Image: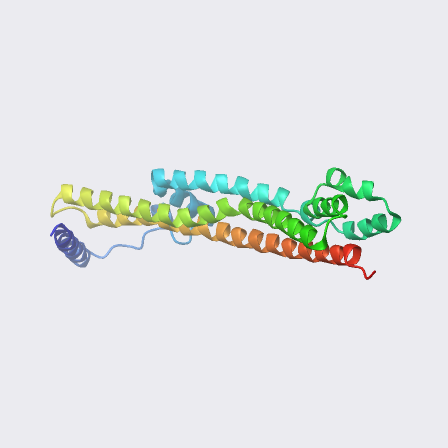
Length: 249
């Protein structure tokens, strides 16, 4: 019932605004200085107006985005190839194995810490066990570390999901505020007041979508990069086990 009253009120205000515009005498074209922000204004000014109109919800969205930016920087610093599968490490490990320097292989996990180095050290330390046990244990260790790297990008996915929801919440709160102001003004209220309130409420939705897109792209990028490194580590480990422990008698 209240919703129908709001639509009726909106219809009455729209008719009043249209009749006022029709009956008004012709006026000269306003100069560019008469408008505060026009469609042709600079992009920076439009962005500032958008942030100003977003209100409290917009500040919450900005704070969440700053946290997401810090998480993205952490992913860039930690998710590097040298931390997962360093280039040339497998070739040097083969040389150490051929030379019988098993102590150096076991120390790789401390000298060159990475997922591949820890796997090689584990293989060298447990080289007297069966191939099946070593392969299963190394596979579990590699899978655990790759899962830990994948968790680094998890906050980015959460933020990409929360931003549009925050924008929707801000839009609903802005619409409620706009309709409340029009209801208090009565039937003779200004239609521009309702239009301005709706415009401000939509700014949070625009910010939510604008913030969600880059975080969603970063989330899938880091996940894809981690999975690619995981495939490389698995291939290197399987090749080393095959060459070192599965040789024909």
